[in-house]
Length: 365
Ligand code: ZN
Ligand code: ZN
Image (cartoon, rainbow, N blue to C red; front, side):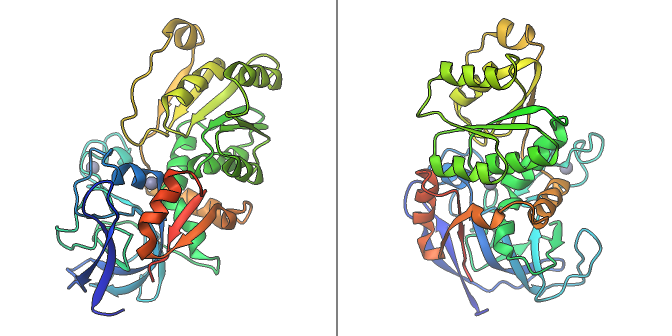
């Protein structure tokens, strides 16, 4: 890699990203310089780009999903399984860095909730050392506390990119509330998060996997991953969907619903389709998206439902998602529908914003 490293920088919200050149950094002990093979364009990046994420201040190199190859290591380093890391190794890493010391890291054993957690491509501007803090870049500097998984095998590492965010968050949903064998699940939102929820539902033995969404290509993708029923919300009314789901479930409603779209209308709809005693798992809201007015008697108390929020993920979840992709049981190679260069980063964000793609990745180097 040359001494100048190019990155796509968000300098102003809603404006095109700018290609900027950074000096190759001098690493501190414990840091790793990784050449980015592929960086995922997440729905959250679109929210950040539009200035909707309260955590982000420009100038920033976007991109919290990445896979790459180690270019330089300062000191002796190991992955989470104790395997030594060397230059030339392909790696994926936990996008969040946690302190390991706070009450959530220790007493509550929920590192995804760490009060000091920060995320590549979200939390640190590129005006702050070591500057290369995001994945829309030819290279990233991984902080010494980053948890790294060495990628083994010959599978195309690009297919692993979605595992680092939507895959890991999905694994978190299924840790908190998996379906039981034979149950019917409903997934609202057929984007990458929804697709991973389909695959995890199948892994957990769900019999019926129903997906509601508004984009034909994304719904078809869910079908390839094991959805048994796909329903286009543009072609059906809420009442028709309710009828379809009751027919599928012998008039009970679904056992578990997963809200993967981050919209209030889908949230309200999910509550409605739940059976008495069902569970509603809600990982979809990555940014503030408005408020819901709920008939608490009919939809919550009388139905005795459990509502479970899901915030980000930890290293175990990343590992489960990586293993799911590597299992070869699902067509993850088809999930990435568009590959773009760094210079096309703005166009990539637009593709995701307009839902013209299922998954877009940038291939910086
Ligand atoms: Zn993401
Ligand atoms: Zn902590």
